Amino acid sequence: MFGYLMPAESELSEQDRRVFRAAYCGVCFEMGRVARMGLQFDCAFLALARNSVEQPAPCCRRNCRVRWFFRKVDCAQGEQMQYAADVNTLLVYYKLLDDVRDSGSLKAKLAVRLIKREYRQAAQRHREMDSMISAQLQKLHALENEKSTDVDACADCFAVLLQLVAAPGGDRNGPLGRMFYNVGRWIYVIDALSDWEKDRMSGSFNVFGHYRDLEQARAAASFSLWFTLSEAARAYEMLFPNEAAKPVLDNVMYVSMPARTAYVLGEIDKNGQPVTKGGGENQSV
Image (cartoon, rainbow, N blue to C red; front, side, top):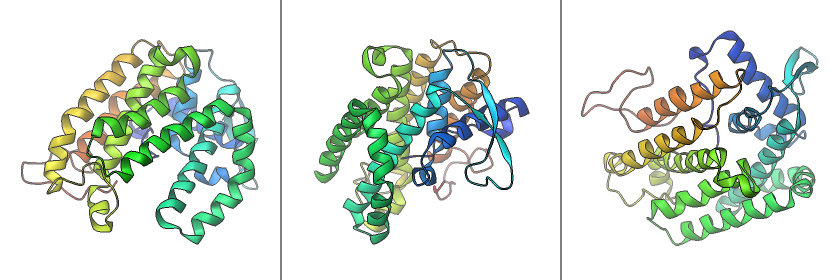
């Protein structure tokens, strides 16, 4: 359930691209060597969104941690980058545990062993968050084991997880918490719909798996996706982000996420052109 919260870079100015890349590189710089392999754009978006209600994060030039010999990169600095790096590490660890549970693959088991030290360091810094992530994922696994068809119940598990990660404590019901609750709900639903055909072939659980065909699943998900997206945007509009972050966050909320929604629902093709009724294409994104 990763990789959905990234801007449409073609719609950004060069300066705005640098802002997002600096956030991404800033999160990357704070991660351990193993966890870095699972770095996702979503956590750069999280760092940028959390930092957007503060002063813009300062940047510095640093050797790239992945290709250090070849280049320097702009890295955003500050506690939000470290926080997002820890969130990413925890989520990668639990995703690997999920892979072990589902497939029992040796590759996943080895990855869990390799990331264990970095996970423990992140969990030690954020004990409450680690417990909360584990609890929400256990709820979700229980529903999946029951082969639940209750989209709201399944999506709520991941929505609450992102809400508490983005806005822990008493802030969870503020604009940032409400925004990420709906973003989390949107991610769960769109991920399930994107994987409908793949899960059908493999026999894996999918909350839309009981629908006869993809068009039925799309019809069932359409209102939920667009409504959840509008609720996320409504909460976002109450954030008043700083000048540096606003164009990037606007792009994700108003351009990238709606375009991904329309594509997965079969309303547009990969080039952003409307799909005529009866048309459509394979959904893998």
